[in-house]
Length: 454
Ligand SMILES: *Cc1c(COP(=O)(O)O)cnc(C)c1O
Image (cartoon, rainbow, N blue to C red):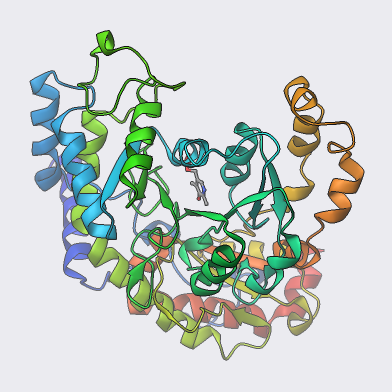
């Protein structure tokens, strides 16, 4: 076999074995004499890092026909492939309508914009999220109001929302962060009571469900991302779903330069009805999306199976606090697998040192988000001439804003969190056991590792 062919063969074989759920033989524990010694102390790796499932997954043989058909047709701007993807996404999540857009960030911006959230409005949101959630609020001239997290679930604490509601509160933006559902029944209760709009940021949570209802369908609208790291990887892309026909018509219009809903892409003679932007999804993105869609259900099932198994293993390690799902969660999306790390149970080994040691074992990991409500962009926005024209100087008093928006539990969570990316959960049961063993090793040698890394 020529080298290139051979690589191709290995690639194909690994994709096939992934699809068939066959155990990857290479992920074996190296049973040397030193098998329990951490890598940092001269032991062998627990797991070979290049054996994790590569992301994104692409199956040339089965995925490329639809993409090539699109490319060869020469119809690359929004047309029937985009419509087909939208129809499938709406059906899959359980919504009347879907509109695809360029990315998740703009899905959020449009959904807020067409919910008439604008200058003078406050939007209640979690500080434990990807920056785009907050940027979407600011892009519409509104002000984010932060509700602290429940560190056991990593989500916005629903019991703390009401205290943050003011005359100006217009919406709540629950973010199903890490692909784990927020407590939507309670959030919806608060929203109903105070007549607030709910826009769900479900960018990390396709197919996550509460009482078998998919997240993204609880509020007025749900937003998704198809960025490359997300559970549906298209490179870039996003979607809004809703049952509200007039709202979806308006979102469509906004994403197409304000041209009326229903006219063909490019028919500019119809005249623009509203202020808009140009944020259309393209045919080849939809083609890639259709290919990715064919695997989503199976991958989601696998992520859940492996995450639940890993949780059952890690629960017994002192100092590893596995995540709590709300009682009515019937499925999570596990875009990330999180836990909280307590250095006290690891002889004072800091989280940074723990991450370094775990990475050395061959388990890719990170500490996740840093506290975003303390980052400079908020101050910069408050000082912008746009905001100064929209708000009084009193309203833009950054010091008092910061005082009112402190989230001490979130700061703590940002210091304690450890994340694995979702592709680790596409491995085998044995892979989960190896992750557990790697952490056990570090736990058993925490003292020595700490000395060594000093
Ligand atoms: C990825 C993400 C977004 C933004 O989506 P993009 O497609 O990257 O623009 C928004 N919110 C959350 C929670 C995300 O994870």
